[in-house]
Length: 207
Image 1: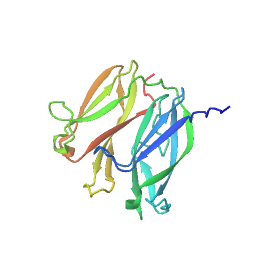
Image 2 (image 1 turned 45 degrees about the vertical axis):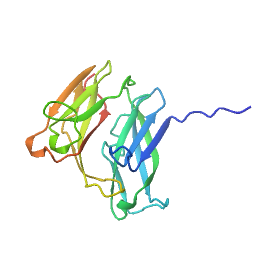
Image 3 (image 1 turned 30 degrees about the vertical axis):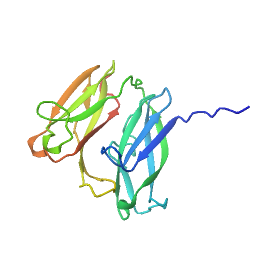
Image 4 (image 1 turned 30 degrees about the horizontal axis):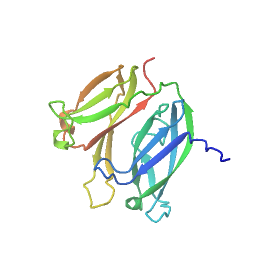
């Protein structure tokens, strides 16, 4: 009689180059438990040959290397990795270590929260020149708090992963009411400079 394998509490997927033209160097962490956590992750970057790259430092856009982002129960946290130092261009894989997972009182998501780049007519766009605002959606029957970051990417270089060169995180986290939409317009001096917008959930600032 075969013993059933116990499912892993967390599953991780790393994509160095996105096939659909979306962000490269992304990491998806799925929480297969009924408990929301704030995970702290540590990374060992590796080359396409599996060799460790000891001089490369790895940080995350949403702060999960510092335990700042919420991974909701039965939900997914998407991270963007940033590599720096000698050999950072050679990263094609990462070993991921879960250093800790601090339990947090946060409801399980019924549907994913979203942020998109929008133009002046509040339509979704992927053109930096038309990126005038951030459209935010919380489809859940409870409020959430979202931390939002704008990403500037380097020019695309053949089949190499496109690296993040600059991140600007909004100074204030955004409290989203249940089943709500929200728009944040960008100041004129940053329009056209950024190529994407990402977000993560953080501990609620309201109770």
